[in-house]
Image 1 (tube, rainbow, N blue to C red):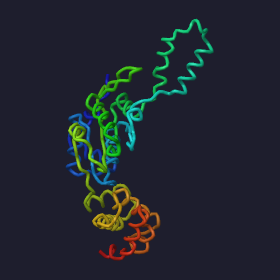
Image 2 (image 1 turned 180 degrees about the vertical axis):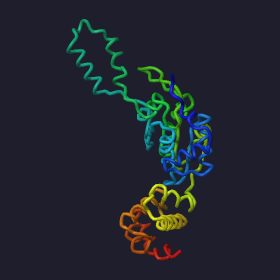
Image 3 (image 1 turned 90 degrees about the vertical axis):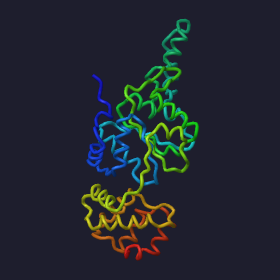
Image 4 (image 1 turned 45 degrees about the vertical axis):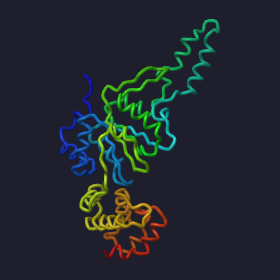
Length: 300
C-alpha cells in the first residue's frame, strides 16, 4: 500500500490556510489559494518578494502542515547540477578498490565487475533534488533561485518537467509521486519565462498592520498585546521609508518584539527602541538614519 501524496491531504484553500495557521504561519486568501492550487494541480510554486516576507517560512510551514519532511536546496552563485543532484563518495570508492586488491588475486579479478561495484548504492551521495525524488511525499524548497545561473535553471526545468533524473553510472531515478516544490526568489534578477511557465506564481508582499500584529501575537504569545502592536506599527513605518538599505521584514519584527520582551519592556519607548535597533536594522547607515529621527518614528 503506497503512502498518500501530500496533495491528497488537503481538500481546499481554507483547509490549507487553517493548517498553516496551526503551525503559526498566517496567510492571506490569495496565498492560501495559490498554495492549494499548486498542491491540487501538482505544479511547482514560485514565490517572489522582498527579503523577509516569509517565502522560505511558507515552505517550512507547508511541510509541517502536511506532515511530510522538508528538503532544502540553497542556491548560490556557481551552483551546478552535481551539487543539487548527486555525487560519488570517492574516498570510500578508493578504499573499496584497495580492499579488493588486498583480498583478491590479480589473475582472478573481474575488471568489469569491480568497475560496476564502484557505482553501487552505498557509494552514492544523494543531494537535495535526488533525495526529494526518492523520498516523496516531501516538500522540496529551492531557495533563492535568482542567485543561480541560466544553466542551472535549464537543468532544474528539465527535472521539474519529468520528475526524474538519469545517473549514467547508476540508472534512472523516478519519483513515485512528484514532490511538492516551492521555489523562492528575492528578484535580484529575473527568473526565465520557461521556468515561470512551469510554475504557479505568487508575489509575497509584506503583511498589513493587522496581520503583522496577529503574527507577532501568534509567534510570541508572551509579548503584551500593546507592545506587539507598537512594534508592528514601527516596523510598518520603517518599511515606508525610502532611505533604508534594507527595510525590516517580518522576521526582524519578531526579533525586535522578542528583544524588547527579553529586556522586560512593556512598551516601545525611546530608550528601549534606541538600544534594540540592532534587532530590526542590519546596516549601520540605516541605524544611524533611524536613530536620528527615532523620536518622530515613535511619536507618529
